[in-house]
Length: 293
Image 1 (cartoon, rainbow, N blue to C red):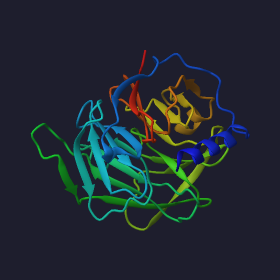
Image 2: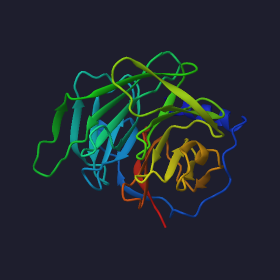
Image 3: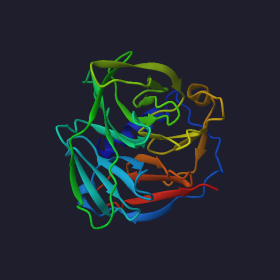
């Protein structure tokens, strides 16, 4: 989405029934600039996830129409590894996450081809692959051909979704609608097969709007979601379901507003979270880190 359109949509929603929380949290320090985005291969970053196999590195990908590639970057936004997903199209990649999968001894990357600005597509896709390990001196480009493709549709209607979450406890996958007020949460219960078409069931509404990214903490005890102007935080106490946790009003994290911030990712050690914007002409783009207190 172009910046002007994104702003117009955000303003329209802010006047609707969705009422973002005014309950501000002091759980995080103010956002700090890390690296500046200068690599032209990362011009339309719409998804960000902390690596498990490569500590202190992050996975990123570009928005629709770009190559089917994921990038392993450091906190200076220098690309360490470029992975091409063989036989895969980047129709509208919107989010990425990392976590457990079918083999408990391995870690996985999940890429969400889940965007749909105009509600044109009946089916959405999530690509699951084993997370590569990289070390200095290795090749900086690889092609990955062993990929599971999860095909699904929403249980009610075709709509845009731009946030993908993986519950590390249950391995359930979730997507969040974007262009609604309130937004809706859809669930794919594990084990989700990679044959046929699954249905992501609508499980609840959440009184926020224009959600463009979300992430579970590595322990599954908290969730972050963001729109273009706000970051929301929910804790998930022990023995509390995801839906019960999300029924409570979120805390709002003071957010350094970015030109077109569509990415958020927890650090895997729980030390805080990252945000990153798409490139916008004549704007300096930075990776931000919000340290947990």
